[in-house]
Image (cartoon, rainbow, N blue to C red; front, top):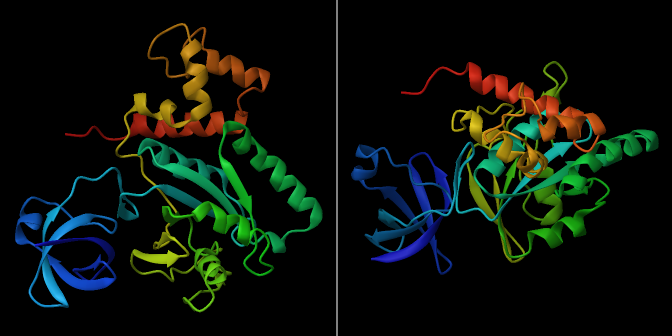
Length: 293
């Protein structure tokens, strides 16, 4: 028996890296029976039939996991959004942040394609994103075309295991190519009819960048809150989580309750009204969800 890490999953095969050697493995039948899916990032015990093929026998305990994208044991999630083509979408950003916060993964916000904006548009966008910086999120503005911000971005990768997430067409693949020339990963143009990119990444795979690992993932444009209960949602908004301690009633949902410290902070501008509206939108969505059995 040997141990390694799954660095790619494709067509029912799991590619396990063990001291620089890649072993193509299948999962044991017991995983399917118990409805357990090995994920990229899993630390596993495998049994090799030869120096190239084997079977995954055991999955080590995970510190975290995501199902969209399917990945485990992540240090940080880099949320990639474009300034233009497609336009920056704050509702979608907040949906991503809710999911990442819920799984207690460190989020970083990355805005690409800054070279497509005029000077006044850049100023407006940075003012809009300053809300997230005040909350405590790190925000990086960059361009794969002009290489603006690329070295700053490289420094935050460090020796971490990171996952890229965001809409398709925002420049995730172009960013990887800019970080490591020679990758020559396939990119795609934005569909003028749909206003979004076509998926160019078909599977989850770790790509080594300097001393770290980045998982390039298939792009997607929506997220469901199936894992969250209504009591969980406010916790995933750091500013609501902090201010909620001052609410008069325990378990306050910051919706219709009296003496709510969060609603008071929204009125004074201490909490972003836009973020609060997104919170209410997500809260209504969770309330309207069909009961889980």
